[in-house]
Length: 482
Image (cartoon, rainbow, N blue to C red; front, top):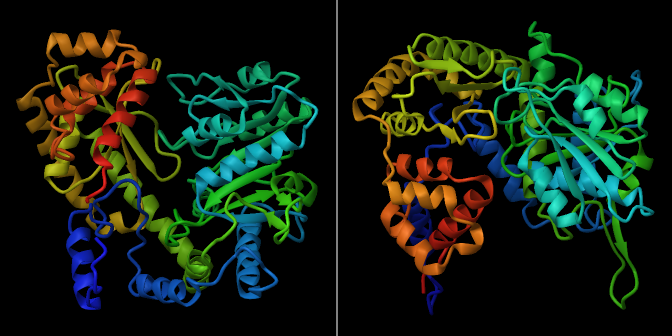
Protein backbone atom coordinates (compact mmCIF):
# COMPACT_ATOMS: atom_id res chain seq x y z
CA UNK A 1 0.00 0.00 0.00
CA UNK A 2 2.68 2.53 1.04
CA UNK A 3 5.41 2.45 -1.60
CA UNK A 4 8.95 3.15 -0.43
CA UNK A 5 9.53 5.92 -2.96
CA UNK A 6 5.94 6.96 -3.52
CA UNK A 7 3.84 6.50 -6.65
CA UNK A 8 3.35 8.98 -9.51
CA UNK A 9 0.09 10.91 -9.32
CA UNK A 10 -1.33 9.60 -12.60
CA UNK A 11 -0.74 5.99 -11.53
CA UNK A 12 -2.51 6.63 -8.24
CA UNK A 13 -5.48 8.11 -10.09
CA UNK A 14 -5.50 5.14 -12.46
CA UNK A 15 -5.65 2.79 -9.46
CA UNK A 16 -8.58 4.74 -8.07
CA UNK A 17 -10.40 4.53 -11.39
CA UNK A 18 -9.88 0.76 -11.45
CA UNK A 19 -11.26 0.44 -7.93
CA UNK A 20 -14.26 2.66 -8.70
CA UNK A 21 -15.11 0.42 -11.64
CA UNK A 22 -16.05 -2.25 -9.09
CA UNK A 23 -18.78 -0.07 -7.57
CA UNK A 24 -22.47 0.24 -8.31
CA UNK A 25 -23.12 3.09 -10.79
CA UNK A 26 -23.80 6.33 -8.92
CA UNK A 27 -25.18 8.03 -12.03
CA UNK A 28 -27.57 6.91 -14.71
CA UNK A 29 -30.80 6.42 -12.78
CA UNK A 30 -30.50 2.68 -12.13
CA UNK A 31 -29.39 2.63 -8.48
CA UNK A 32 -32.35 2.84 -6.09
CA UNK A 33 -30.46 3.25 -2.81
CA UNK A 34 -27.49 4.90 -1.14
CA UNK A 35 -26.88 7.75 -3.62
CA UNK A 36 -28.93 10.72 -4.82
CA UNK A 37 -28.38 11.85 -8.38
CA UNK A 38 -30.14 14.88 -9.85
CA UNK A 39 -28.58 14.37 -13.32
CA UNK A 40 -27.74 18.07 -13.54
CA UNK A 41 -24.85 18.72 -15.95
CA UNK A 42 -21.85 20.37 -14.33
CA UNK A 43 -23.07 19.92 -10.75
CA UNK A 44 -20.48 17.27 -9.88
CA UNK A 45 -17.68 19.49 -11.13
CA UNK A 46 -18.98 22.51 -9.21
CA UNK A 47 -19.32 20.54 -5.98
CA UNK A 48 -15.88 18.97 -6.41
CA UNK A 49 -14.27 22.37 -6.95
CA UNK A 50 -16.03 23.81 -3.89
CA UNK A 51 -15.03 20.77 -1.84
CA UNK A 52 -11.39 21.07 -2.89
CA UNK A 53 -11.30 24.75 -2.04
CA UNK A 54 -12.33 24.12 1.57
CA UNK A 55 -11.13 20.55 2.18
CA UNK A 56 -8.32 21.64 4.49
CA UNK A 57 -10.33 24.21 6.42
CA UNK A 58 -11.21 22.98 9.92
CA UNK A 59 -14.67 23.45 11.37
CA UNK A 60 -13.29 22.96 14.88
CA UNK A 61 -12.87 26.69 15.45
CA UNK A 62 -15.33 29.06 13.74
CA UNK A 63 -13.33 32.07 14.90
CA UNK A 64 -10.32 30.90 12.92
CA UNK A 65 -12.32 29.96 9.82
CA UNK A 66 -15.25 32.35 9.51
CA UNK A 67 -15.94 31.14 5.95
CA UNK A 68 -17.25 27.86 7.33
CA UNK A 69 -19.30 29.66 9.97
CA UNK A 70 -20.95 31.77 7.26
CA UNK A 71 -21.65 28.74 5.08
CA UNK A 72 -23.04 26.69 7.97
CA UNK A 73 -25.34 29.51 9.03
CA UNK A 74 -26.54 29.92 5.45
CA UNK A 75 -27.29 26.20 5.13
CA UNK A 76 -29.10 26.08 8.46
CA UNK A 77 -31.10 29.16 7.51
CA UNK A 78 -32.12 27.64 4.18
CA UNK A 79 -33.26 24.41 5.88
CA UNK A 80 -35.12 26.32 8.60
CA UNK A 81 -37.01 28.47 6.10
CA UNK A 82 -37.96 25.40 4.06
CA UNK A 83 -39.24 23.62 7.17
CA UNK A 84 -41.38 26.32 8.72
CA UNK A 85 -38.87 28.46 10.57
CA UNK A 86 -37.61 31.99 10.10
CA UNK A 87 -39.15 35.48 10.09
CA UNK A 88 -42.90 35.64 9.74
CA UNK A 89 -43.48 32.16 11.14
CA UNK A 90 -44.42 30.78 14.53
CA UNK A 91 -40.94 29.25 14.77
CA UNK A 92 -38.82 32.32 14.06
CA UNK A 93 -36.01 31.40 16.50
CA UNK A 94 -35.03 28.12 14.85
CA UNK A 95 -31.32 27.30 15.18
CA UNK A 96 -29.32 24.36 13.92
CA UNK A 97 -26.07 22.57 13.32
CA UNK A 98 -24.40 20.89 10.37
CA UNK A 99 -23.61 17.22 10.96
CA UNK A 100 -21.99 14.45 8.93
CA UNK A 101 -25.26 12.68 8.15
CA UNK A 102 -28.66 11.61 9.38
CA UNK A 103 -27.31 9.17 11.94
CA UNK A 104 -25.28 11.88 13.65
CA UNK A 105 -28.26 14.23 13.55
CA UNK A 106 -30.46 11.65 15.26
CA UNK A 107 -27.80 10.81 17.85
CA UNK A 108 -27.50 14.51 18.69
CA UNK A 109 -31.28 14.94 18.91
CA UNK A 110 -31.35 12.14 21.47
CA UNK A 111 -28.31 13.57 23.29
CA UNK A 112 -29.88 17.01 23.56
CA UNK A 113 -33.09 15.52 24.93
CA UNK A 114 -31.24 13.27 27.39
CA UNK A 115 -28.91 15.98 28.67
CA UNK A 116 -31.82 18.39 29.14
CA UNK A 117 -33.07 16.01 31.87
CA UNK A 118 -29.97 15.33 34.01
CA UNK A 119 -32.12 14.34 36.98
CA UNK A 120 -33.25 11.15 35.23
CA UNK A 121 -31.22 8.02 35.92
CA UNK A 122 -33.02 5.91 33.31
CA UNK A 123 -33.94 8.13 30.34
CA UNK A 124 -36.08 6.61 27.59
CA UNK A 125 -37.13 7.47 24.03
CA UNK A 126 -40.31 6.43 22.22
CA UNK A 127 -39.85 5.54 18.56
CA UNK A 128 -42.18 3.82 16.08
CA UNK A 129 -40.91 0.43 14.92
CA UNK A 130 -40.57 2.02 11.47
CA UNK A 131 -38.23 4.70 12.83
CA UNK A 132 -34.72 4.68 11.46
CA UNK A 133 -32.25 2.22 13.01
CA UNK A 134 -30.08 5.22 13.95
CA UNK A 135 -32.42 5.81 16.89
CA UNK A 136 -31.48 2.37 18.21
CA UNK A 137 -27.83 3.23 17.65
CA UNK A 138 -28.29 6.49 19.56
CA UNK A 139 -29.97 4.69 22.44
CA UNK A 140 -27.16 2.13 22.54
CA UNK A 141 -24.38 4.71 22.50
CA UNK A 142 -26.03 7.12 24.95
CA UNK A 143 -27.34 4.64 27.51
CA UNK A 144 -30.98 5.42 26.77
CA UNK A 145 -33.78 2.84 26.73
CA UNK A 146 -35.56 2.48 23.41
CA UNK A 147 -39.33 1.94 23.61
CA UNK A 148 -40.68 0.93 20.21
CA UNK A 149 -44.29 1.34 19.15
CA UNK A 150 -45.65 -1.14 16.58
CA UNK A 151 -46.95 0.04 13.23
CA UNK A 152 -50.21 -1.02 11.64
CA UNK A 153 -49.37 -3.68 9.02
CA UNK A 154 -51.92 -2.10 6.68
CA UNK A 155 -51.09 1.62 7.01
CA UNK A 156 -47.43 1.07 8.03
CA UNK A 157 -47.84 3.89 10.56
CA UNK A 158 -47.99 3.98 14.35
CA UNK A 159 -51.23 5.00 16.02
CA UNK A 160 -50.82 8.27 17.89
CA UNK A 161 -52.73 6.76 20.82
CA UNK A 162 -50.17 3.95 21.05
CA UNK A 163 -47.35 6.49 21.03
CA UNK A 164 -49.06 8.47 23.80
CA UNK A 165 -49.52 5.29 25.86
CA UNK A 166 -45.80 4.50 25.56
CA UNK A 167 -44.71 7.81 27.10
CA UNK A 168 -43.47 7.43 30.68
CA UNK A 169 -42.18 9.88 33.27
CA UNK A 170 -38.64 8.92 32.15
CA UNK A 171 -39.32 9.62 28.46
CA UNK A 172 -37.13 12.43 27.16
CA UNK A 173 -37.96 12.26 23.44
CA UNK A 174 -40.69 11.05 21.12
CA UNK A 175 -39.81 10.52 17.48
CA UNK A 176 -41.69 10.21 14.21
CA UNK A 177 -40.75 10.04 10.53
CA UNK A 178 -41.49 12.18 7.49
CA UNK A 179 -41.35 9.79 5.78
CA UNK A 180 -40.17 6.47 7.16
CA UNK A 181 -37.29 5.15 5.09
CA UNK A 182 -38.50 1.58 4.59
CA UNK A 183 -41.90 2.28 3.06
CA UNK A 184 -41.96 6.02 2.43
CA UNK A 185 -45.08 6.81 4.47
CA UNK A 186 -45.45 9.88 6.67
CA UNK A 187 -46.29 9.30 10.33
CA UNK A 188 -49.18 11.24 11.95
CA UNK A 189 -46.79 13.98 13.06
CA UNK A 190 -49.39 16.47 14.33
CA UNK A 191 -51.08 13.91 16.56
CA UNK A 192 -47.80 12.49 17.85
CA UNK A 193 -46.40 15.97 18.54
CA UNK A 194 -49.57 16.87 20.43
CA UNK A 195 -49.24 13.77 22.59
CA UNK A 196 -45.60 14.60 23.33
CA UNK A 197 -46.42 18.21 24.17
CA UNK A 198 -49.23 17.15 26.49
CA UNK A 199 -46.69 15.02 28.36
CA UNK A 200 -44.07 17.79 28.40
CA UNK A 201 -41.70 15.79 26.17
CA UNK A 202 -39.68 16.84 23.15
CA UNK A 203 -40.79 15.62 19.72
CA UNK A 204 -38.25 15.03 16.96
CA UNK A 205 -39.27 14.65 13.32
CA UNK A 206 -36.84 12.54 11.37
CA UNK A 207 -37.14 14.22 7.97
CA UNK A 208 -33.63 13.19 6.96
CA UNK A 209 -35.11 11.43 3.95
CA UNK A 210 -37.98 13.70 2.98
CA UNK A 211 -37.33 17.06 4.57
CA UNK A 212 -35.86 18.68 1.47
CA UNK A 213 -38.37 17.30 -1.02
CA UNK A 214 -41.74 17.17 0.79
CA UNK A 215 -42.15 20.98 0.80
CA UNK A 216 -41.57 21.05 -2.96
CA UNK A 217 -43.93 18.14 -3.55
CA UNK A 218 -46.56 20.05 -1.58
CA UNK A 219 -46.07 23.05 -3.87
CA UNK A 220 -46.62 20.72 -6.83
CA UNK A 221 -50.00 19.67 -5.46
CA UNK A 222 -49.06 16.47 -3.65
CA UNK A 223 -51.18 16.17 -0.47
CA UNK A 224 -48.36 16.30 2.09
CA UNK A 225 -49.66 16.37 5.69
CA UNK A 226 -48.22 18.84 8.22
CA UNK A 227 -44.87 17.64 9.53
CA UNK A 228 -42.55 20.60 10.15
CA UNK A 229 -42.22 23.52 12.58
CA UNK A 230 -45.70 24.71 11.58
CA UNK A 231 -46.87 21.84 13.81
CA UNK A 232 -47.12 22.81 17.46
CA UNK A 233 -45.12 20.45 19.64
CA UNK A 234 -42.40 19.68 17.07
CA UNK A 235 -39.20 20.66 18.83
CA UNK A 236 -36.51 19.44 16.40
CA UNK A 237 -36.19 18.25 12.82
CA UNK A 238 -33.36 16.56 10.93
CA UNK A 239 -32.91 16.86 7.16
CA UNK A 240 -30.07 15.45 5.06
CA UNK A 241 -28.66 17.76 2.42
CA UNK A 242 -26.85 14.84 0.81
CA UNK A 243 -30.19 13.28 -0.06
CA UNK A 244 -32.72 15.40 -1.94
CA UNK A 245 -30.77 18.64 -1.71
CA UNK A 246 -28.35 16.62 -3.88
CA UNK A 247 -25.20 17.75 -2.06
CA UNK A 248 -22.23 15.36 -1.91
CA UNK A 249 -21.97 13.24 1.22
CA UNK A 250 -21.96 13.82 4.07
CA UNK A 251 -24.00 16.81 5.18
CA UNK A 252 -27.12 16.84 7.33
CA UNK A 253 -28.84 19.59 9.30
CA UNK A 254 -30.27 19.23 12.80
CA UNK A 255 -32.73 22.03 13.61
CA UNK A 256 -34.16 23.02 17.00
CA UNK A 257 -37.17 25.28 17.51
CA UNK A 258 -35.17 27.61 19.76
CA UNK A 259 -31.63 28.03 21.14
CA UNK A 260 -32.55 26.71 24.61
CA UNK A 261 -33.53 23.37 23.11
CA UNK A 262 -30.21 23.14 21.27
CA UNK A 263 -28.03 24.08 24.26
CA UNK A 264 -27.68 20.53 25.72
CA UNK A 265 -26.46 19.31 22.35
CA UNK A 266 -23.10 21.04 22.87
CA UNK A 267 -20.12 19.44 24.55
CA UNK A 268 -17.56 21.65 26.27
CA UNK A 269 -14.52 20.68 28.34
CA UNK A 270 -12.01 22.99 30.00
CA UNK A 271 -10.52 20.83 32.78
CA UNK A 272 -7.22 20.05 31.04
CA UNK A 273 -4.17 22.14 30.07
CA UNK A 274 -4.95 22.34 26.35
CA UNK A 275 -7.47 24.47 24.46
CA UNK A 276 -11.01 24.54 25.80
CA UNK A 277 -12.97 22.10 23.67
CA UNK A 278 -16.45 23.13 22.58
CA UNK A 279 -18.29 21.10 19.96
CA UNK A 280 -21.85 21.45 18.70
CA UNK A 281 -21.63 18.01 17.05
CA UNK A 282 -19.89 14.69 17.71
CA UNK A 283 -16.72 15.44 15.77
CA UNK A 284 -14.14 18.01 16.75
CA UNK A 285 -12.09 18.38 13.59
CA UNK A 286 -14.39 18.68 10.59
CA UNK A 287 -13.34 19.18 6.99
CA UNK A 288 -14.90 22.20 5.33
CA UNK A 289 -15.11 20.29 2.06
CA UNK A 290 -18.60 18.77 2.43
CA UNK A 291 -20.00 22.02 3.84
CA UNK A 292 -18.62 24.08 0.96
CA UNK A 293 -19.86 21.52 -1.56
CA UNK A 294 -23.35 21.66 -0.05
CA UNK A 295 -23.29 25.46 -0.07
CA UNK A 296 -22.29 25.50 -3.74
CA UNK A 297 -24.97 22.95 -4.64
CA UNK A 298 -27.79 24.88 -2.97
CA UNK A 299 -26.66 28.18 -4.43
CA UNK A 300 -26.42 26.73 -7.92
CA UNK A 301 -29.70 24.79 -8.05
CA UNK A 302 -31.85 27.41 -6.35
CA UNK A 303 -35.53 27.21 -5.50
CA UNK A 304 -36.68 26.78 -9.10
CA UNK A 305 -34.14 24.02 -9.66
CA UNK A 306 -35.34 22.06 -6.64
CA UNK A 307 -38.95 22.47 -7.73
CA UNK A 308 -38.09 21.11 -11.17
CA UNK A 309 -36.18 18.16 -9.68
CA UNK A 310 -39.09 17.37 -7.35
CA UNK A 311 -41.47 17.36 -10.32
CA UNK A 312 -39.23 14.96 -12.26
CA UNK A 313 -38.97 12.70 -9.21
CA UNK A 314 -42.74 12.76 -8.65
CA UNK A 315 -43.33 11.73 -12.27
CA UNK A 316 -40.78 8.91 -11.96
CA UNK A 317 -42.43 7.64 -8.76
CA UNK A 318 -45.83 7.62 -10.47
CA UNK A 319 -44.49 5.65 -13.44
CA UNK A 320 -42.57 3.14 -11.29
CA UNK A 321 -45.60 2.53 -9.07
CA UNK A 322 -47.68 1.98 -12.20
CA UNK A 323 -45.14 -0.56 -13.45
CA UNK A 324 -45.40 -2.50 -10.18
CA UNK A 325 -49.21 -2.46 -10.29
CA UNK A 326 -49.07 -3.89 -13.79
CA UNK A 327 -47.23 -7.07 -12.78
CA UNK A 328 -49.26 -10.01 -11.54
CA UNK A 329 -47.92 -11.30 -8.22
CA UNK A 330 -46.64 -7.96 -6.92
CA UNK A 331 -48.33 -5.32 -4.78
CA UNK A 332 -47.30 -1.95 -3.45
CA UNK A 333 -46.69 -1.91 0.28
CA UNK A 334 -48.21 1.58 0.30
CA UNK A 335 -49.40 4.10 -2.23
CA UNK A 336 -46.40 6.41 -2.75
CA UNK A 337 -46.53 9.57 -0.63
CA UNK A 338 -43.02 10.83 -1.20
CA UNK A 339 -40.08 9.50 -3.18
CA UNK A 340 -40.21 5.80 -2.27
CA UNK A 341 -41.74 2.91 -4.18
CA UNK A 342 -41.90 -0.23 -2.06
CA UNK A 343 -43.45 -3.50 -3.13
CA UNK A 344 -43.84 -7.09 -2.00
CA UNK A 345 -44.95 -10.38 -3.53
CA UNK A 346 -48.44 -11.86 -3.28
CA UNK A 347 -47.43 -15.11 -4.98
CA UNK A 348 -45.63 -17.55 -2.63
CA UNK A 349 -43.80 -19.01 -5.62
CA UNK A 350 -42.34 -15.62 -6.52
CA UNK A 351 -39.18 -15.20 -4.44
CA UNK A 352 -38.46 -11.49 -3.91
CA UNK A 353 -34.79 -12.14 -3.25
CA UNK A 354 -34.44 -14.00 -6.54
CA UNK A 355 -36.31 -11.12 -8.20
CA UNK A 356 -33.80 -8.64 -6.78
CA UNK A 357 -30.96 -10.68 -8.28
CA UNK A 358 -32.76 -10.78 -11.63
CA UNK A 359 -33.22 -7.00 -11.58
CA UNK A 360 -29.54 -6.60 -10.75
CA UNK A 361 -28.64 -8.79 -13.72
CA UNK A 362 -30.63 -6.35 -15.87
CA UNK A 363 -28.78 -3.34 -14.46
CA UNK A 364 -31.32 -2.22 -11.82
CA UNK A 365 -29.89 -2.08 -8.30
CA UNK A 366 -32.66 -2.25 -5.71
CA UNK A 367 -32.69 -2.75 -1.94
CA UNK A 368 -34.21 -5.91 -0.44
CA UNK A 369 -35.83 -5.54 2.98
CA UNK A 370 -36.29 -8.53 5.29
CA UNK A 371 -39.41 -9.59 7.15
CA UNK A 372 -40.24 -7.77 10.38
CA UNK A 373 -43.02 -8.75 12.79
CA UNK A 374 -46.22 -8.84 10.69
CA UNK A 375 -44.59 -7.09 7.73
CA UNK A 376 -43.46 -9.20 4.76
CA UNK A 377 -40.13 -8.94 3.00
CA UNK A 378 -40.15 -6.20 0.38
CA UNK A 379 -38.17 -4.38 -2.26
CA UNK A 380 -37.33 -0.71 -1.68
CA UNK A 381 -36.74 1.85 -4.42
CA UNK A 382 -35.39 5.27 -3.50
CA UNK A 383 -36.35 7.39 -6.51
CA UNK A 384 -34.34 10.43 -7.59
CA UNK A 385 -34.61 12.87 -10.47
CA UNK A 386 -32.07 10.90 -12.51
CA UNK A 387 -34.52 7.99 -12.75
CA UNK A 388 -37.02 9.99 -14.81
CA UNK A 389 -35.29 9.55 -18.22
CA UNK A 390 -34.91 5.78 -17.63
CA UNK A 391 -38.24 4.98 -16.04
CA UNK A 392 -39.85 3.65 -19.25
CA UNK A 393 -37.23 0.90 -19.31
CA UNK A 394 -38.10 -0.38 -15.85
CA UNK A 395 -41.55 -1.86 -16.53
CA UNK A 396 -40.45 -4.32 -19.26
CA UNK A 397 -37.37 -5.30 -17.25
CA UNK A 398 -39.48 -5.84 -14.12
CA UNK A 399 -41.86 -8.08 -16.09
CA UNK A 400 -38.94 -10.07 -17.50
CA UNK A 401 -37.27 -10.32 -14.07
CA UNK A 402 -40.48 -11.61 -12.49
CA UNK A 403 -40.80 -14.24 -15.22
CA UNK A 404 -37.19 -15.31 -14.68
CA UNK A 405 -37.65 -15.45 -10.90
CA UNK A 406 -40.75 -17.62 -11.30
CA UNK A 407 -38.87 -19.92 -13.66
CA UNK A 408 -35.98 -20.23 -11.19
CA UNK A 409 -38.33 -20.86 -8.27
CA UNK A 410 -37.87 -19.88 -4.63
CA UNK A 411 -34.61 -20.43 -2.80
CA UNK A 412 -34.80 -23.65 -0.84
CA UNK A 413 -32.44 -23.60 2.10
CA UNK A 414 -31.13 -27.02 3.17
CA UNK A 415 -33.11 -28.25 6.15
CA UNK A 416 -30.09 -28.14 8.46
CA UNK A 417 -29.29 -24.56 7.44
CA UNK A 418 -32.87 -23.39 7.99
CA UNK A 419 -32.87 -25.16 11.37
CA UNK A 420 -29.69 -23.29 12.32
CA UNK A 421 -31.19 -19.98 11.25
CA UNK A 422 -34.33 -20.47 13.29
CA UNK A 423 -32.88 -22.16 16.39
CA UNK A 424 -29.33 -20.87 16.74
CA UNK A 425 -28.63 -18.19 19.35
CA UNK A 426 -26.14 -15.38 18.67
CA UNK A 427 -24.03 -16.60 21.57
CA UNK A 428 -23.69 -20.02 19.95
CA UNK A 429 -21.98 -18.65 16.85
CA UNK A 430 -18.37 -19.80 16.89
CA UNK A 431 -15.68 -18.64 14.44
CA UNK A 432 -15.68 -22.12 12.91
CA UNK A 433 -19.45 -22.06 12.43
CA UNK A 434 -19.34 -18.58 10.91
CA UNK A 435 -16.55 -19.61 8.55
CA UNK A 436 -18.53 -22.66 7.47
CA UNK A 437 -21.68 -20.64 6.89
CA UNK A 438 -19.75 -18.00 4.94
CA UNK A 439 -18.15 -20.63 2.73
CA UNK A 440 -21.50 -22.28 2.09
CA UNK A 441 -23.01 -18.93 1.14
CA UNK A 442 -20.11 -17.92 -1.09
CA UNK A 443 -19.01 -15.07 1.19
CA UNK A 444 -15.51 -16.34 1.91
CA UNK A 445 -14.17 -14.94 -1.36
CA UNK A 446 -16.00 -11.60 -1.30
CA UNK A 447 -19.56 -10.60 -2.14
CA UNK A 448 -21.26 -13.06 -4.51
CA UNK A 449 -23.00 -11.76 -7.62
CA UNK A 450 -26.30 -13.25 -6.50
CA UNK A 451 -27.43 -12.69 -2.94
CA UNK A 452 -30.76 -14.53 -2.81
CA UNK A 453 -29.44 -17.41 -0.69
CA UNK A 454 -27.78 -15.04 1.78
CA UNK A 455 -30.93 -12.91 2.04
CA UNK A 456 -33.10 -16.00 2.47
CA UNK A 457 -30.96 -17.18 5.36
CA UNK A 458 -31.07 -13.76 7.01
CA UNK A 459 -34.82 -13.54 6.41
CA UNK A 460 -35.33 -16.84 8.23
CA UNK A 461 -33.30 -15.75 11.25
CA UNK A 462 -34.73 -13.70 14.14
CA UNK A 463 -33.43 -10.09 14.36
CA UNK A 464 -30.81 -10.74 17.07
CA UNK A 465 -29.27 -13.55 15.04
CA UNK A 466 -29.48 -11.49 11.85
CA UNK A 467 -27.49 -8.77 13.53
CA UNK A 468 -24.77 -11.13 14.67
CA UNK A 469 -24.58 -12.89 11.30
CA UNK A 470 -24.28 -9.59 9.46
CA UNK A 471 -21.57 -8.41 11.83
CA UNK A 472 -19.61 -11.61 11.25
CA UNK A 473 -20.12 -11.62 7.47
CA UNK A 474 -19.12 -7.96 7.06
CA UNK A 475 -16.16 -8.54 9.35
CA UNK A 476 -14.97 -11.25 6.95
CA UNK A 477 -15.05 -8.71 4.12
CA UNK A 478 -13.25 -5.99 6.04
CA UNK A 479 -9.80 -7.49 6.28
CA UNK A 480 -6.64 -5.50 5.48
CA UNK A 481 -4.31 -6.26 2.59
CA UNK A 482 -0.77 -6.70 3.85
